[in-house]
Amino acid sequence: MARITKVLVANRGEIAVRVMRTCKELGLKTVAVYSEADRTALHARFADEAYCIGPAPSRQSYLVAENILSAAKQSGADAIHPGYGFLSENASFVRACDKAGVTFVGPPATAMDAMGEKTRARANMMKAGVPVVPGTTAPFANADEARAYAKQIGFPVMLKAAGGGGGKGMRRVDREEDLDSAWRTARSEAMSAFGNDAVYLEKFLDQPHHVEIQVFADTHGNCIHLNERECSAQRRNQKVVEETPSPILTPQMRAAMGEVAVKAAKAVGYVGAGTVEFLVDSSRNFYFLEMNTRLQVEHPVTEWVTGIDLVAWQLHVAQGGVLPFLEPIKPRGHAIEVRVYAEDPATNFMPSPGRIVELRTPSGPFLRDDSGVYAGYTVPNTYDPMISKLSVWAPTRAEAIRRMQRALDEYVVKGITTNIAYLKGILAHPEFQRGDYDTGFLPRAHQQLLGVEDPERTKLARLAAVLRAHQRAEQQARQLPTQAPTAATSGWRTSGRTLGGWKRS
Image 1 (tube, rainbow, N blue to C red):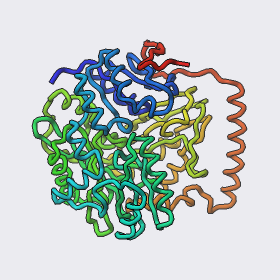
Image 2: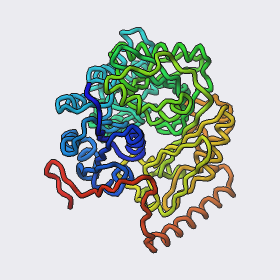
Image 3: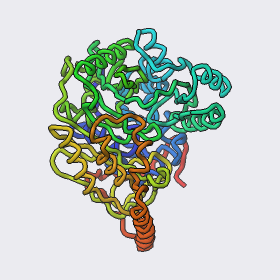
Image 4: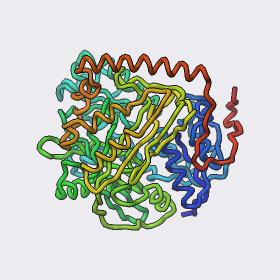
């Protein structure tokens, strides 16, 4: 395989910056692509070169393969790293990269065909004898078919996007009369996020744990697992807090789940970083849920406990390299990650786009903040509202929790509403502290995490919200000057290059 010299990152936000950092450490040139809404985004400033690929909607920019490949050709990039989301699990895009002679940093299209499409992955795992959550092995043609199957296996059920993950295109349906509305919403979300509106159905398991196994494979037939991540702290099927090792797994369970995950990856000729996700019931039986054929949002916690740069491994394997380790790596210490969102948990997690007028991120030993924003940056209302991933490491779980609590106390974001206070509530909650929390934890504890059971606290929170809105209005009226990021920002100017005939207005 040809040596990689310049990498185009076909993504945005924190993951684009994170990938570019490893590229720079490896001496590789970096290329950013950005939509019109992201013209001043950190990832566009951080790269050596940046190319505009279309208007703000992702279906006209980040999901347009032709524009991304045109940017690769224009910049001379010989590799494309997809990050996660957008085209990262799109087999057609992988084939287009192959045809254009550009290395796709990820699995081959055949493996993505087998595992990237969730229903196909379920069918393949059933053939391989892997236990799966009861459900369909093909998308439904219409809502009537979905309703008939749901009545057959019994409510509640979960509608899920076949073409992607990350909580997009997922809807729990408790009653037959709610299915039509959930069907329309799930398809719409799936199309917007992945360019694929196919939806399938699974039986909803009550209060399971969501545990995933990180796998890695090379082109020489080697495949290992890099332990698990506990991802049960979720809201709307979107992970909020992740940790490793999982508090509920024994060494025997870890070995068994790791063996199944490796078997699944080898069965489809997988290459690169992938994640096999499982649901674990109250009896500690585990069931295959899906495989994410890409780097996961929560990969930093695995990097903390293994000492491995997973992006560096991805680039190494993409060039035909052999895995540096061929045996599972025992986890060292404990790591926790929280996702900081521009959203208001008190208003049903409504996104809170706007201008960040002040930003003070935490620092200190064994702490990492993967961010895609800076003071003065305006968070757009077009994309996922996650602004950073904060992760910590410590020798024990209790110490990791305390370190994360200290870090969140230091985190200051002014000008927009964030979920930082909500994250503090999660870490302090007895159920999380005990380590035996399931996927129903956050919905059950939501009111308590907001503090609404205390009338005085609620009154104070409302007064604070009014004051915060008043202060924000005053700050925006003063039009504070934009503060450029202090990271090693490229001298390259985003010159308004256009692709595919699209012009800047």
